[in-house]
Image (cartoon, rainbow, N blue to C red):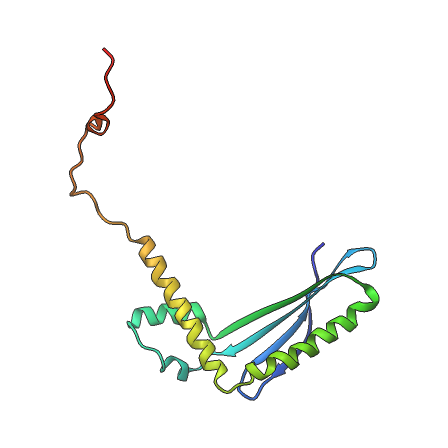
Length: 159
């Protein structure tokens, strides 16, 4: 059974970060639920972030295209086999605990820049890795013997 995604709320922090909460819970059996709460931390990528990085212009443009205008950090909290009566209270508790535990970190004025730098580094490594995998050396100038019998010199021929 597919879960219906329900947008719960958005939190706008002073540093420009937006946290979006979603309820993706689904019924598993009778009155039992798999309670799934997802939150997306959305960081808008400003031009000032791009001025902090250097590299080949073509590579920077590839990274810019890969990252887009927003970068998103997603976290999912799941609890299994929760009764229908406990479901809403558990969702409220998870949201409350998330606010208490992670908002201090996400609200730090340096968070958007640091997260951008991390995503930039990961995107750069991924693009460079893909380029290395696509490169295949041209071995046409290497002469190889047509007869491979020299590889099996220890095998006796039966005649």
